[in-house]
Length: 125
Image (cartoon, rainbow, N blue to C red; front, side, top):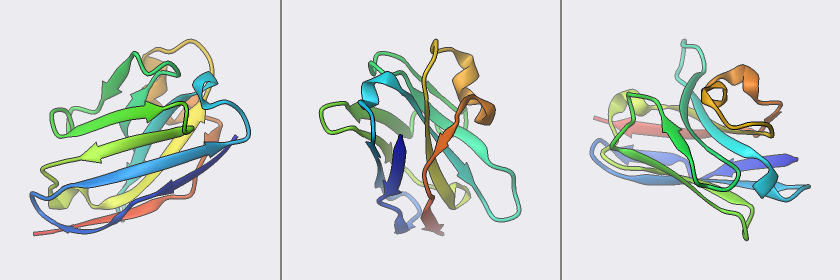
C-alpha cells in the first residue's frame, strides 16, 4: 500500500489544521492507520491510531481532547483533525499503515510496515 500525507502548513497557536492521508494499492479497510510526528532533534512519536473499520481509536496523552483521527474507507483516506494547536505540536507528521489484530501495539512505530512521506506542521506562538 502506498501512502501520501498532505494538509500541513503554518498556523497560529490555538488554530486548527486537518491532515489527510490517502492510501492506494489495496482496500484501506484492511489496514489500521496511525499518525506519528517528529519534531526537530527529537525521536518520532505516536500521535493517534484508528482500526481498519474505524471503530477503535487511541491517542497520545499529549493530544487527547484536541486531535481527532477518523477515516473514510470509501475514499481510502484517513484524517487527523488538529484543534487548539500549540507550538509544541510543531513537527513533521507521518501516516502509517499495517494489518493485523488491532491492539495497543499500533501505538508503536514497529507495528507499521508502510509509511508515507511526512507533511510539515508549524505552529507559531
